[in-house]
Amino acid sequence: MEEFFLDVDLEIWLTIGAVLALIALSAFFSGSETALTAVSRPRMHHLARKGNARAGVVRRLSDRKEDLLGALLLGNNLVNILAASLATSLAIKLFGETGVVYATGVMTLLILVFAEVLPKTFAINHPDKSALAVAPIVRLVVAVFSPIAKAVQKVVRAVLYLLGDKPNAALRRETLDEEREEALRGAIELHHGTDAETESERKMLKSILELADLEVEEVMTHRRNVVMVDGDRPSEEIVAEVLASPYTRIPIMRDTQENIVGVLHAKALLRAVHAAGGDASHLDLQEIASPAWFVPESTTLLDQLQAFRRRREHFALVVDEYGVFMGVVSLEDILEEIVGDIADEHDLPLAGVRMQPDGSYVAPGVTAIRDLNRELDWDLPDDDATTVGGLIMHEARLLPDAGQTFEFYGYRFRILRRVRNQIAQIRITPPSRRRGGQESGDD
Image (cartoon, rainbow, N blue to C red; front, side, top):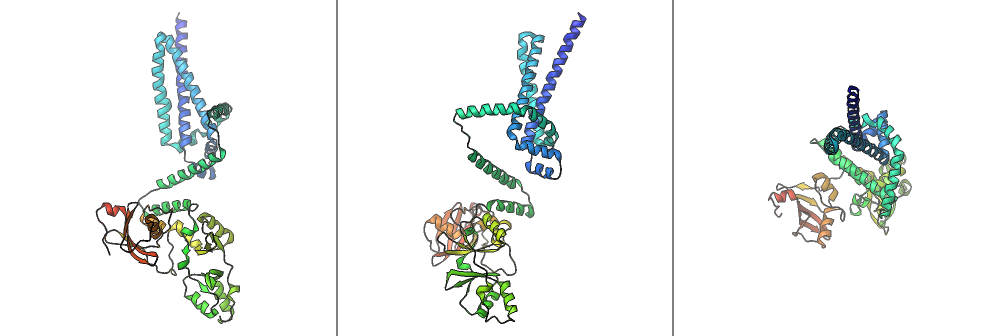
């Protein structure tokens, strides 16, 4: 009789030990799933490149996300079901039929606390550390369970197909690309700080992502403001104009701006003048000038930047769909979209944006909306217009007169001056100043 009770006690303790071991395995699967899905992929990539073997395993597991999740879910469900079955069997032996109720309550509590909430909370608080710790073991789990997990995935896909959810590989790739870009933008937004250096870094990172969405017409120097030289004038006069100009690359035109025959580089011109002994009267500027390079105004800044690198050029002429000359774009224009204005000793003094005592701003109508948004942290839309004057005309659907006031997107715009068909000067009152009850007065 004593041996019987000893055998019974041993069986009970072995069952309890097995249940606890299975709960520990369940905790491992749950925590691993959370850690490997929440891990910082950029940090793992960086560690792997530095030679961290475990980080390389984490990267490979993340690339096989379907196999990873399938294997972990399979293992987790397997041990949970087995633990619940053993606990129920033990409870029935000890308490009879009512043991089912006891086993259900106890196992629900144990699995919820120790196999789900606890490991997942730890993993979400220490995702990188946890992922590196479990990666080697999870790799073995995936290797063992992935054949079964793949079979389950095929069954799931077949059921979804029958329900009308047909896979579209191209659409899926496009969605994944958008999700990755949104994730990157979100990470940049989270890169915040109180110091000016951190804010500058955040602005530059955002600007880099926007290069593929901006076109050269949005950053080019308009033809109205392009400095050009007339190729039909005497060479010595052209040399004097080039020396007086703040620019190193100047288009050469004949008769009209539409007939651009080349681009004159100040260095090449000075070398030619030096070779001629300082006598510029007999120079052939057409031979000195480089061929004009025309690009469509719809070219994205990212494509144009790559084209500058391929051609080893820093300057291009912009034309519209009809081949009409619209302006010029330089490598500096694109770089300024990333790092902000680059001022040097040769830049021309331009009438810029001036803050008024009441908090409003007086700006030229040709001020770029993107510059205002970036420098003043505004959110004016730039989808339909490049300049603030163009935005007013687009929204008002008319050419406004001096003195007229408009309100768009929470901002107040007052036309201060108009020159012929162009808005020359505007007073802009941002929403923050208007909410504060400090409306701008008239000039």
